[in-house]
Length: 296
Image 1: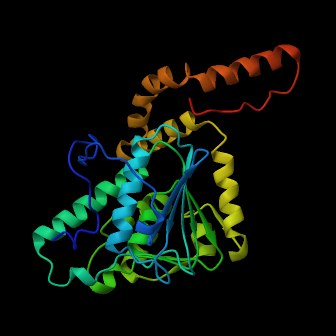
Image 2: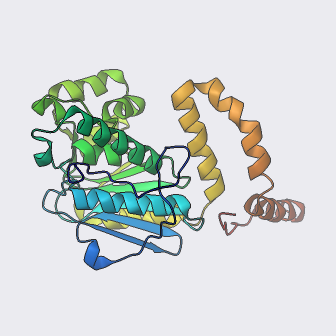
Image 3: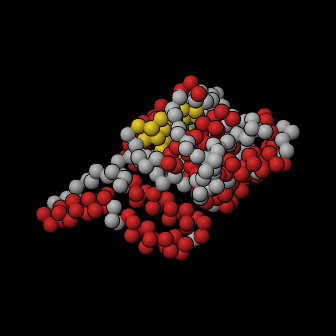
């Protein structure tokens, strides 16, 4: 069964919100054991790279390493931004469905339950996530990209849900996240037809943030990464939390969180330091200085 569960969580203990169990887990960067996924963390920037070309299928090894990287990030306090990208000509064609043939109902339940937990943990990490997408971005790969806060795409990128072509639905929450971004009508069309949406239309619809020529993708994505790594990390975390509350329960659900969140954020080192510089500039009649945010 272990080989079939392409999302495998370390044992035991607990990340309480998601029911993911692990104990005394220390993530070690080991390139020899990470041939299908690369994970680095430097100067507050975490970079996760799918490295299973040409299709970057979400094979067992890749998703196990992805799980380890995400759990490590959930425990760190020094991350300012996460950068998700892929080597090769295509971002990802989605899951490696080979092991699914003959799978039992119980195994499917565990597979999808763990996959959703991993995806939610990744999406809810309290820092901005930037995804750089080239070529085909489909299935589970598309669903991981949809968990990012910013999607930068090359002009050759194509997005789609091929799941219906093998008789299944979007198993990691893809259709509802497309609906959240661009509306139910277009989300349903993408799911029903399995048609690929080119980058220019994805941008026009509001599915993604930016489209650039393929040879400029890395620079464009890095511009987002570097900018976000130096800005108000705590405020970004609050905005993510508010948008999640809005998505789950509407405007009033988000409103209900704001006083408690503000009570923590406004007294932070970043906000107090930024306020001090702004107030001094106002009194002196000078432009407000750019504050060097620390994420504290």
